[in-house]
Amino acid sequence: MKLLVTGGAGFIGTNFILYWLKNHEGDEIVNLDKLTYAGNLENLTSIEKNPRYSFIHGDICDSTIVNKVMEGIDKVVHFAAETHVDRSISGPAVFITTNVVGTQILLDAALEHKIKHFHHISTDEVFGQLEIESHDKFSENTPYNPRSPYSASKAASDHLVRAYFHTYGLPITITNCSNNFGPYTFPEKFFPLAITNILEGKKVPVYGDGKNVRDWLYVEDHARAIDLVLNKGKIGETYVVGGLQNGISNIDALRKILTIMGKNEDSIEFVKDRPGHDRKYDIDWSKIHNELGWEPIFTFDEALKKTISWYTENETWWENIKSGEYASYYQKQYPHS
Ligand code: NAD
Ligand code: DAU
Image 1 (cartoon, rainbow, N blue to C red):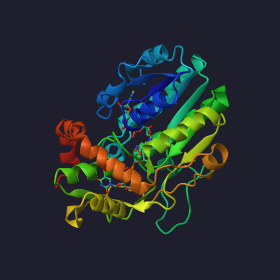
Image 2: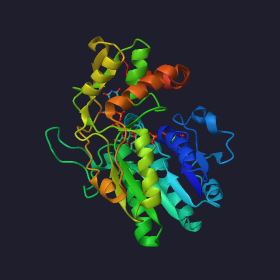
Image 3: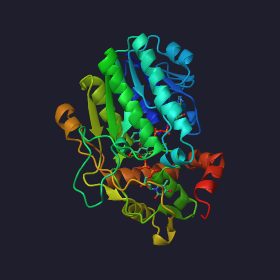
């Protein structure tokens, strides 16, 4: 089978490609990526000479390139997106272009090339937020209620994907996953920002009161969920994917990181809250569990230790990022740090 992966030079796409090539020996992967600030080919040097892997530098909004790469493809796994909520607040336009228009261009090309299965990677943020005290969880039946330009753009893309199924019969599936963590996460996201700041002897900026709750999942568990949906998922269906059973607050997650890294709470710095900051996400992943037999393999604590070890052992990877273009983003985002 030949897979087209979009956005494979980013965090989850990289982990997915490495996972897939290891676990599906006969398959080939074509990776289409624009290499935005978040795309990094260094992630994939271990497979760049693998005959089952090829890279195409291109934009999902460019229909000429997209139609060319779709030739001979069996299945598409669509990760490419602008993904950072804070960046969507300071500059929403590119989120609409890539996440909405880019997805529509891929869907048109998938129809044209009679793709057998188009799998769209989405987020739990499309459902909005839960109250901290609430015992509710997001499921496949939760109404959409996105609250940031990022989540609104992802919601729009989900609607388009479903519309192409109902209107044109394009064979699609969607997964809406909670917060991922693990190797190769760009250090703008909370966990790698915390770990690398601690390694640099800097404080960790915590938004608001630090009590916002997230449902964290180790990235390899997400890759296995996508694998199951691609192989056994029912066409036209959506599956929500999550990790922790009751989530964890940012401050408690940070305390765990500090303990593992042998630091105390002097490293915490409370900063101005993110506008429209979603209070809590929590996922009821019983559908994918009951229908496809998926559940997370990694415990949160064990995966956190693995992730911290990876950043500790791969200083050059994140130092290159932090000393480049990202440094001026950091200055603007955290002016008082
Ligand atoms: P990322 O920001 O690390 O990587 C995004 C990748 O997409 C980069 O390689 C980038 O170069 C590429 N890209 C961006 N615009 C492009 C364009 N116009 N054309 C081609 N390539 C382009 O993102 P990630 O965290 O790996 O997220 C991947 C997908 O998973 C996204 O769709 C995101 O919404 C979804 N998701 C992420 C999380 C999470 O916790 N990170 C959780 C649930 C869902
Ligand atoms: O839920 C899935 C989503 O998870 C994905 O769709 C997004 O692409 C991904 O970026 C992530 O969104 P979040 O906004 O939840 O992730 P982030 O790592 O930016 O923030 C996690 C929490 O930590 C959130 O409550 C905000 C907080 N935070 C974040 C940063 C960057 C801080 O307290 N300080 C920070 O400096």
